Length: 79
Image (cartoon, rainbow, N blue to C red; front, top):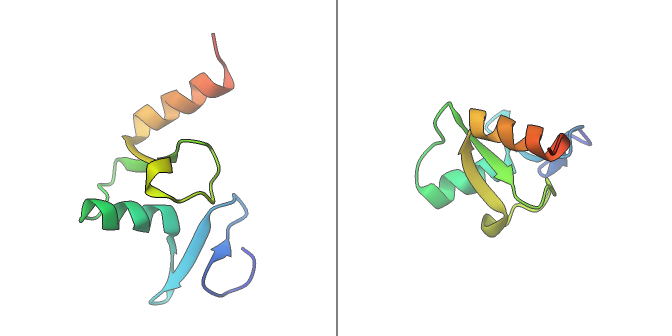
């Protein structure tokens, strides 16, 4: 991560915020606020345009871990 402050970027390209002594991924926090609930353990937030810093709600999609894995396998290895 670059710097300890708010809005740091992880080495994988996600924006995180320091909240109460721990880091919170911005895209997950935005989706939880939009849904009005915490994400379930099996839910992930996918960036539709693959830009990990584009955390607009219209670019975020909630999916299961399994769906997300299959999507990225298809994108890497199209038939």
